[in-house]
Amino acid sequence: MSFKFEIINKESINAVVPLVEKLNNNRISYEVLEQRFSEMKDQNYECAVIYDDDKLIGVCGLWFCTRHYSGRSVEPDHVYIDEAYRGKGLGKAFFKWIYNYVKEKGYESVELNTYVANAPSHKFYFNEGFKILGFHFIKTL
Image 1: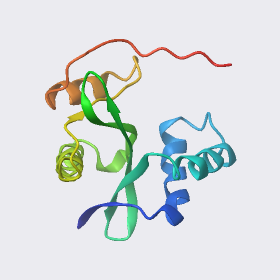
Image 2: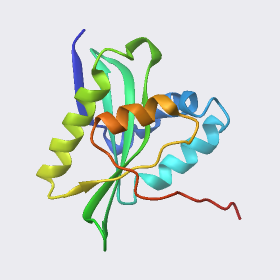
Image 3: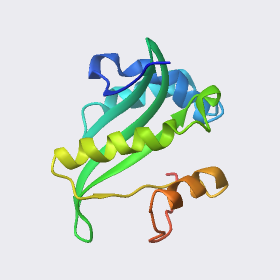
């Protein structure tokens, strides 16, 4: 296995949609995700991916901003690694690559949200040194 981490070209962004569909248990249609990614790619957003040779096996969106309490910050979003590749240290290697990438861009902190019911991700992020800062609320309009 030859893993490669990179930022996907904005014109190729729809390649990540099938992985994000799996992340969301197909609750959001391909068409809706495709439309949303077409908007996201033109915002303060980049998409990191993992390839095993030529096969796309992982994705992590990166939202860039400046916050009064954390400075120049990046928010990893919709992190997903194909089930067949989990438990092998790939997530740790991917986040190490992400930390280095965003640090080189001049960002000083990483913060994220994860679903309350996703206990395996909580363990992963605690092991990565993340601390719980608050709650994330959403209201659909």
